[in-house]
Picture 1 (cartoon, rainbow, N blue to C red):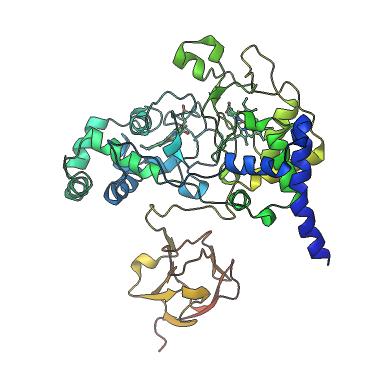
Picture 2: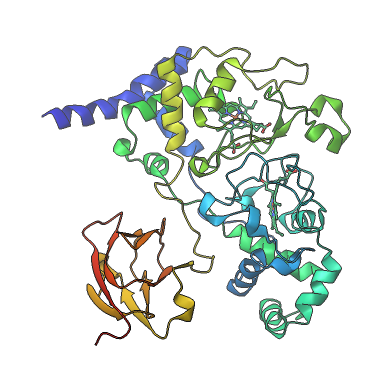
Length: 444
Ligand code: HEC
Ligand code: HEC
């Protein structure tokens, strides 16, 4: 009974709220209003690609490898993924990454989801194509301190790279600057954020969001005014706005030579932002709560403030919490890992010296075999050949290990340097148990 009542409430709530929102237009069919917002936030059915750089599996594979290749940096130890870390939705968890000169970079590392739909790149939009963007960090003396001509020579002398470039670019089979940019860009276009609960709601599932989340959405498109800039399924208008952060960075202004655009930055997408704190171009706001407080009461008044920014928003504590609850629905439940990235290999202990390695499967939420007897010096490899994300954990006197999300394809390799009994479980599916006994090397 109670459950039915709740579901019923969830069905009518959006109708009520949107009717309130629409204000004067309340006599319009409220059903149409919901359909209007569902359409406004519907995801596209394909990823755009430029005709001069079509996305092919060969280019994507090469681009994914280059994204992790430290040979692109002048110092030989920095890759794109040093800052754009897959586990953090391609950001880095800090307000501003420390540059090669030991000082923080000017701006925060932005996440890289849904770049394919962009109109300009960087916080100030100074790159006009994704292809052109990649040269920026490679040659920036504080980021990768690389020299593209030099990097091209180094990669060009690697037979494996020669082969990968030739396969990816059959019409122009050479390791060139243009092909390098194209491959990285093709890989970046595959970074599409997956559907979340909000998308289920957009597709018509009224129960996908709870009452607070829907109330938050209603504020987002209503009195809080967020939708003026955070529009469409990616939640950005791709335009530049000054939202009154105290930072002295002039953003878009100097790029255009137009002082009216000072302090304006590109509206960021809000997809998968649960994983990408801290926020804003300078990483100055630590949480969604801080962001909402900024809009409600922290705006620095300046002549350049965006005309799309509400002058004054009154939000109660409850309403602020509802907005945050809504923002959370735009992120996956676990950090998503794009299929175009090579599988992750995690290593713990000292398995490199192991004389032999036993492989355990995780198919259908089961460690198989479920019990293993190893000798000291032998290693164990746990392969996620399941369709689900797992979380391998060992908590014993001699070993404490946590794999974080272990996605399909990822492997965890454990080396044991103490004899004894080890219980291994999956934190997400605790019914999965693997019992490991390690006998001392001489024991038979
Ligand atoms: C040292 C850290 C660092 C490294 C290494 C790095 N980036 Fe970035 N990346 C940043 C920062 C910081 C920004 C924002 C700079 C700005 O807007 O002025 C950025 C911006 C970007 C953007 C623009 C995103 C947007 O929303 O407009 C893309 C795309 C990107 N990087 C891709 C790459 C690629 C590809 C590589 C490797 C070739 C790379 N980055 C290497 C820190 C890094
Ligand atoms: C006038 C346009 C505009 C409005 C209105 C607006 N935003 Fe923003 N939003 C931006 C811009 C621009 C940034 C980046 C600003 C910067 O870094 O200097 C941003 C940043 C954010 C961020 C941080 C994202 C990240 O990855 O750093 C969040 C979260 C956010 N806004 C949520 C909201 C919410 C919630 C509302 C409504 C209360 C709202 N925004 C209203 C333009 C807007």
